[in-house]
Image (cartoon, rainbow, N blue to C red):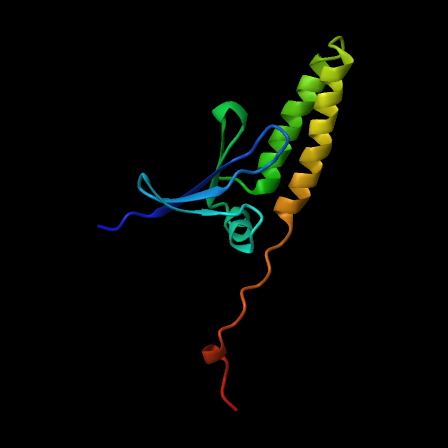
Length: 123
């Protein structure tokens, strides 16, 4: 019986993605660059299980939804930090800006897979 491949990646509090782990059962098969076309295609198809800061599961959701959840968390933390030191508020604001940048990069459409030469019709 063949086990299905699973994919998992972590997102830091500022949206910075960790490598996408490809596993068969518990065995790690390979790591994918989270900004690679293959990883973006897997994310867009909802095949990556996203893990948020402190190990909080975000589920098998599109990267845009995972980043939106992190944005809500950062905004709540920023609202709660109104009386906190300026450095803490500045760090949260910086985290929101980085999250926007990572979110845009994760959501870029993957490049179409090139056709193999031998699959093109002969003339």
